Image: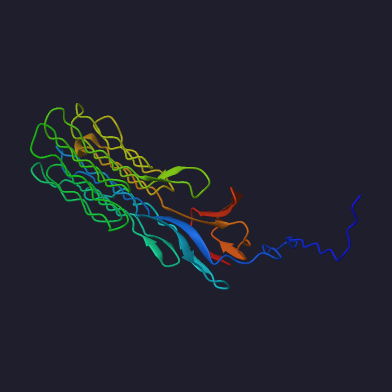
Length: 303
């Protein structure tokens, strides 16, 4: 058998009891991030013959190679979704989500409807809210984050709201001609930063005034569905930044849906050490060669 001689050195990496510091592993200098703002609520109609627009999705921003420093806490803010309006009118915008210097705006509220002949325009935001029926225009989206909302139907047999914009595409325009239909919510974008593919930032669809109208689908990625008589609007899905569905007419008593809260996720290779401290109770996983931190409430991280 062959013989070997010389000095052999064994190097072990271990975690000290009660510590997040792994001996021998350096702190990360860059991370990948996903920051999604809170979705907006849909608009509420102010009259008996019109419907509200869908809420816009929260802004969607993601990138790799973002530089992080060590020794100081990095702020994480998870934006809340917009609440259903307490009275008739435009939906409430979602709130901004933040990781360090990266901000994703909350979605724009869906337009309400003032009278039988005019509607409110959707509000601007991460994605714009859909216009309130009749004739309300979609709100604008934030550049490099999301898209504009769709327009409400013009004068016709049924007044329907436009869809809220999503991360992938604009909200749909409502149809004022038979077959009457509210605008669909703009679709969101899928991300696998968490370790599995999840779609975020879908817009809410507009509401419909007439029971015979078709209500557009909520955007993929948590977008809510608009109301029509006897069918309630749905909320945007929590922690997706989805917009809420628009209301039906006030005579139906069906309000709009609330916006879904946002989310912040970061990850980096697990050849780097864990964070030395976190707040906000993030979910921490190690899978696929990455350390992944997911916040559904505001907090911080220190490397």
